[in-house]
Amino acid sequence: MTAARAFITGLSGTAITTEERAFLRDAAPFGLILFKRNIADPHQVRELTNDFKAIRGPDAPVLIDQEGGRVQRMGPPHWQAYPAGAVYGDLYRRDRAAGLRAAWLGGRLIASDLTDVGVTVDCLPLADVPVAGSDKVIGDRAYGDTPQQVAAVASAVAEGLKAGGVLPVLKHIPGHGRAMADSHLSLPVVTADRETLEATDFAAFVPLNGAPFGMTAHVVFTALDPGLPATTSEIMISQVIRGFIGFSGALMSDDVSMGALAGPIAERVRRSLAAGCDLVLHCNGNLAEMQEVAANCPELGGAALERTARALASRTAPQAIDLEAARAEFDELVSGRAGAVTG
Image (cartoon, rainbow, N blue to C red; front, side):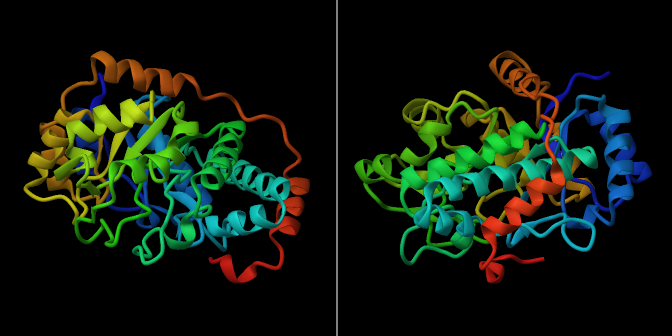
């Protein structure tokens, strides 16, 4: 098996094309990320993930963004609709134990859905702390508006995922909640001072700094690096993500094809890796761009290889659970919040 290169790739559709098959074999991505365009039904997703692993090896990770609410790649009629993160946060404010239990169950049930179709990594939880007036790209995806509550609920979600045999990805480090723009479209610039950031935005990530994987934020924090977003800033990665937050896991960029980053794809890739990202994430399934990404990513080595290997090795078999009883308990906990549950 060819040694993995330092990137995670998307695919164009519900099956691997002949051209993509050659690309996966020759370019050797570390992992695959799935989107709605890749998903039809459970049987199809299983075939797709099995096909990918047949090419890249049985331990090659398959990722997805399965949060609930607005961000749910697998949904009805084949999979349960899960609530947005704010539902757990609202329940936590009323009854802390109930909120944490619902968050854990949500993570555990999502994990069951994912492992059933061969997905092993979920880009969840978020530890973003939104502020009044911030862009709605985070919005009701957040677990609260204080770092303490966000960290507590995010930890419960992460533990639920791990109990179900799925590795969590902590995002968007060091925080997207204060951003006044959607980084899918343009580059957000945060002007808060360092003391404020360390007390709020950055603080929410500290209790989760042992997560196996993390994902950067395409956000500029002018108090630390006025010119570059965290993804491509050596200052932000070394001083804040690895330093103040103490994140010790494998660090991936957010999608390098997003509108927040400038320049050609190859330049974005090189800058992300040079800044300290272990892995580059590229999601849109455009084969020409995928080839550019691969051409500019080295084989995993050194500390990046150690961190990615440690992350994958931390995955355990799902713990036994009565899924029917767990779903009934979960539904009861989040009942009365149907408006926040979307398909």
